[in-house]
Amino acid sequence: MTTRAANTLTARWAATLDGEATVLSGAGVYPLLALLARYADGPARDELSAVVGDPMGVDLTDSPTTRMALGFWARRGLPLSERWRTEIPAALRGELTGDEAVDQAALDAWAAARTDGRITAMPVRATSGTAMVLASALSVLTTWKKPFDNTRCRPTDGPWAGQDLAGLRRRGRDLDALRVVDAAGGPVSLLTVEGTEDVDVLLALGPAGHGPAEVLPAAIGVLDGDAPALPLTDGPGVTEQIVDASDATPELTVSTVAFTVDASHDLLRQPGLFGLTAATDATGDHFPGITARLSVTQAVQNATATFHATGFSAAVVTAFAMRAGAMRPRATARKRLVELTVDRPFGFVAVHRPTNLVLVAGWVTHPAVVV
Image (cartoon, rainbow, N blue to C red):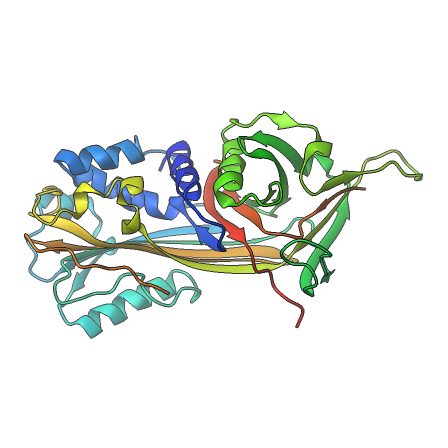
């Protein structure tokens, strides 16, 4: 995948969010969109290609912290093209039996195995009419180069006022880890929490009342060099004072909160964002490079992320279910001293450091509490 195209998808997606807690991964969706674009034709190819661009570039194979897996299942007897059978390695291809219980169990087991049990079920549901399932699994596990101390955080104002939260605090001399950028909705404070290997996490705090739609795209824009810098003292949550000390080296104290965020996203609620509008039309022949008259009926991503004193972990499974033939798609919505103080809702972005690829991004509204 290309870093810029995948990051652009993540930023565009984040710009549609409301203020609820969530976590998402454009990097988890991108490989599936790129695969479909490769085998698509007509309007479906045009829409998908506009989203994925030139799908070349980032390779996570040798990353010590990040794993990406792909899996593709086709219904037994489905006439797959010679091109598909030749180009897609047999190790990535599985078979759907048509027995819903058997197929769902196999899909769920794949998702659990490739996320170390953090996501226990495939986001889409196998039915007797499911012709294909395409899935990606992304997992991240990193420890901090400089851990935090566990403490208690009890904000005096804002939406978390009076709550006894699981706070994190650390003090150091890495003032360069804090940046303030000028975003469309106002300044955004960005703290880079450096991992010991190849993944960092950015904590992003915007002005009071600003949500993920304003804050997260600004954080992602920094990775592509698109956000102008501001003085640190302009940053939300940032204070500065001059004190007597034994040396003149600046210090940075960070106070934040631990969190776990879980989310499920029905991508077909915004099909145009992902280039999937034409692909959901059951009457078209969108993917002749795979098989005749294939259409997307489900597209769902489940994700989870945890930030704590010693590190960060995340797991994402994205899956598309497809039907063959001119059948009407089903409805698939599933309801349900320079100091930075982060004591109200904020964003986070996990970044693969060598490539600047955004692995996951999210918004925190309910941090962990003291038990």
